[in-house]
Image 1 (cartoon, helix red, strand yellow):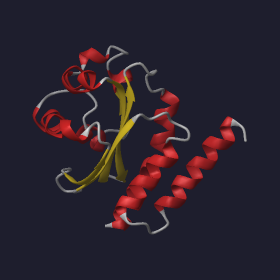
Image 2 (tube, rainbow, N blue to C red):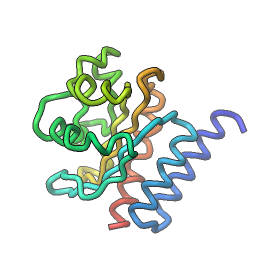
Image 3 (cartoon, rainbow, N blue to C red):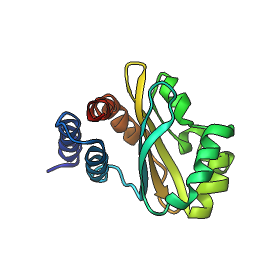
Image 4 (cartoon, one colour):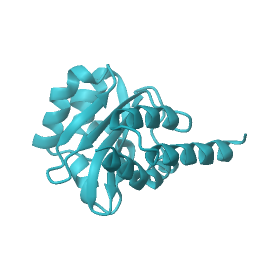
Length: 173
């Protein structure tokens, strides 16, 4: 199968997962497995959220990220930075990545300097999973520091999936 065929098949498989009636954890784990087929991902964070407050209600976090959870939470809720989940939940585009937001100067992000770089991570691709204005979860995909930054094409692929992922999370609740 050619690259386009793989991408389209993966997109269809993820959409199917979102509408298959899976529980939230299974949906999130299987979605990450599928995404890895077309977007190189080294570690990930995939959380459900309370639509009223945008606070995380549950998360699947790769082992590398788990010890830094307090730092990530402080950065997300207490400090100014780029590509914040709450902003994505309210913006025209529910997807953003550090490389784009910092013009490929990741060190312009406090999250990168204080958390990602010490973990040997580089760019991150974030998504708010919305149905209309209602956000049901958040996803953050990370690459190792030595890996290339995320691309506009990868962000567009994820953007097309966000309403389906949101519907899947909403139905799972």
